[in-house]
Picture 1 (tube, rainbow, N blue to C red):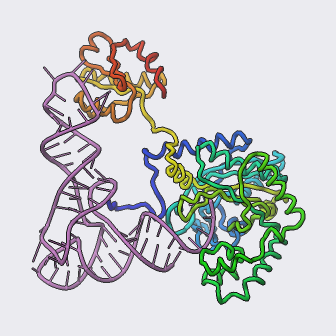
Picture 2 (cartoon, helix red, strand yellow):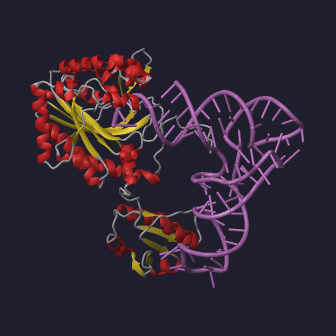
Amino acid sequence: MSSRYARPRGTFDILPEQSHRWRYVEECFIDVAARFGLRRIVTPIFERADLFERSVGDTSDIVEKEMYVFSDRKGRRFALRPEGTAPVVRAYVENNLHLSQGTARLCYSGPMFRYDRPQKGRYRQFYQYGIEVIGSDHPAIDAEVIGVATLLLQELGLTGWRLEINSVGSPATGDAYEQALLDYFSPHEAQLCADCRNRLVKNPRRLLDCKVQGCRDLAVDAPVMLNYLDDDDRAHFAQVQEHLTRMSVPFVVNPRIVRGLDYYTGTAFEIIDDRLGAQSTLIGGGRYNGLVGQLGGKDRPGVGWAGGFERLLLALDEEGIAAGEPLRPVGYIVALGEQAAAVTPSLAHRLRTAGISVEFDPDKTSMKAQMKAADKCAAHVALIVGDDELARGVVALRDLATGEQQNLAEADIIARLKTYKR
RNA sequence: GUGGCUGUAGCUCAGGUGGUAGAGCACAGGAUUGUGGCUCCUGUGGCCGUGGGUUCAAGUCCCAUCAGCCACCCCA
């Protein structure tokens, strides 16, 4: 149970019995993304620490207390990436993608790192998949981006989620709104919980979704962001909704949605599954029209989202969806006697060269043990080779599901095995 | 960073008030000299998370620490 070197807190091993599910889900994501013209981009797992400090916001929890920061041998400050958008935008700017693509459509997946207290659906090294579309402010793009997320969930067979959308406005209207919140809540400061008193100075919008009853009562009559949007933002948001409706993507407007990262502007959305526990956000994202310019590029609008693989798998568990199948060999070679054992490796290699998956275990010698192993690895057929078969130049091919068995010359085996899936 | 619960075999867990460990599953072998799944029998497997303390004696009591789970916070 206790090994000398335990894995770091908040990390996990993906063992073979689970790894096929991860692969399945990732392939499903890539497949859906491809239909939208989203092409894969891969960025380093660590970046200059200030990339995140500037983009995500240096007063955000992420950079204040959750980043894995380290210095290299020359004293440069780096951070294990806590999120995917800033690195993608950095790559967009650095490689001048605005010149080669009209609107860049990108997708990515990989590990992210956040020094959080682990709990259900939250880890220190976790895996995200996400998309970013950079170069257009058109509301159709917002709707399309959201559509990628809902289509993915739909194709995975998931039904227990809901889409909530909001518009958080531009920096200017956002500031005005936050001031309105302060004006509203400040007189009641004494009635707020300790966390909310802190939010008052740090992140006023978070006052809206406090879980403490007293704060919730106050929040009921608080100013609503949507009333502070300027005409452009309001029209944009309305069109996003229109497109979603025409796309038959069900959504609810939730004016309380807050995004935790500073770079968000305009459309914000979350896909929530309440069965996942406290960490119920399956996918979250929104528009970030100032970020590209802020990171030194031409001023280009962007929209995107990210989702957590762990939470997606949790949701699949919740709905009893298998998500792919574990690897199983077509054939398992059962070698009886030393003569057979001597030719088994080469037989296996010829079959594998022909594209057929076969297994055998030279450490098992009894027929019983080998047949059991064939059964356990779920092989479709057992290829039995003993003295009789060797003498006659055949292999006994036993279908493990039906029990039917026949002798075949090696030349015929390959054609026969190819009739089995995988 | 805060709080609650929990750490005993590979896995899931039993082990009143302290007397140096057990089950089921899994695994291995056998019943069945070359035929798996089912059944039965047998067997392997344990620094009882780690360190310290109390005691003649600690899996059991006390302290610390690490880890897991869940929640707060935050977010994917």
